[in-house]
Image (cartoon, rainbow, N blue to C red; front, side, top):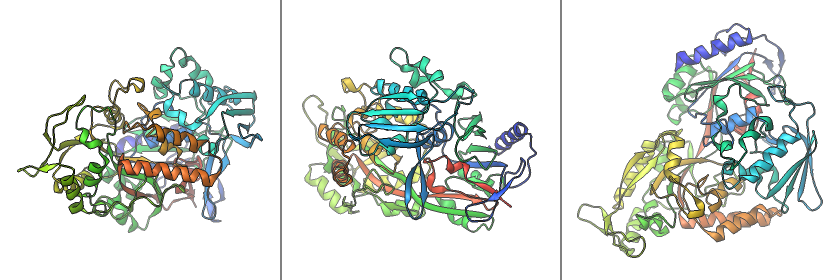
Length: 576
């Protein structure tokens, strides 16, 4: 891993026609400036980032991992993005859009785009690209573009009035348009339109990484890609926004977090974008490294298969059973052992990052005696071997009496010690008379395929029949719309990981998006979170802090903007 990362930096050095200079990622001609603290900012060099999160796709119509989201932001245009400051928190600002306005009836949003912009292959970047992206996503929203469609919920069409003017038409006023559009990547029409023929399946199967150089337009261009290695980004000279202070960025994926931390300490990395929790205190003792902690958007949970058509182990559809088992999980111990104290308990799927988190859920108490009493009262008797027995059932999904033994599927792509977290859950379930074993599901793509099932067809209610329980994580958004959407029937075979079907909930999801009054929308959003909680679609475990670390030879980091803005990578700079 280490030698490969150094080789990539050497290649970049040739591309930049600059000599690599020691620690701090050096290289390139220096330019002096003033940083945000009034100190000296040194332009140039290669910013070397280490990560335990990999890029699974460069196609916004087919991805899972958060690192892909971060890359989309860096290489594709967004209409708007976030900025962050301590006084105002997260505030929208333009990226490709210079300004925007809304019609009197709230149904039409007009964006004025920056002039004379172009794609990396010198094709003009115009409002036509944005209109095509939106219209195509709408056209195939029930199929190949479902993953991206949450960004334009309630939009009916878009049109390019002229090269710099985009109008998006909505079916009704929408209360969170900018929050939705922040997640929308504008794609090059001249590359993707040939994939949108027929049923549009080509949009989903296209792999831009196999067609380097990727046609992009943003803060960076990609020069090298390795899914489980190092990806190299060159600053795009045509980017309209704040230029990257570094000439290039390398993002190296580590399967061994100890090796990553060692490379940071030895000066072979400049920045670790997420510090392993067991290494935080060690790095804080290093005088050459700054450890930075900000509120995190990532939550961990137990995911329960809640598909009403699941064929087996239907006792796990009962919220009372799931609650009883959840009461035997010691979340405080998970926080202490797995997250070294850098996490909090959480009750809602949307997490603490959202100002619309319902503060009145639960809290779920750790009380296994009460959980066992609930299971006794529900008729799940304890066997002589200490394992409870689920009674026989009749009807369409009849199943003989069987011991309450299940597998918990877990992906290999977690950014925390998932196996240790599983061990604590297993111990708690055992105390409740339920036996579980760990089922390693592979990387995120493979694990998600297990959850959704194959074939998966929402029209036939087909899918979500291969697993009972999973343990995974979610990285939420400031606006909770996306997180609330994942349990709708509309996200079956796409973002849904539970297979839950609830018409009343789906209607509320639609209503909250069309509710412009903030207080009324908050009421609806809180009600929806209560429904998710009461049904125990998930057992929420932790909301952990986001902790990064960087060499003191670099400064200007805006850690709050991870996967929210291009300035997350463009702002770091070397210090003189």
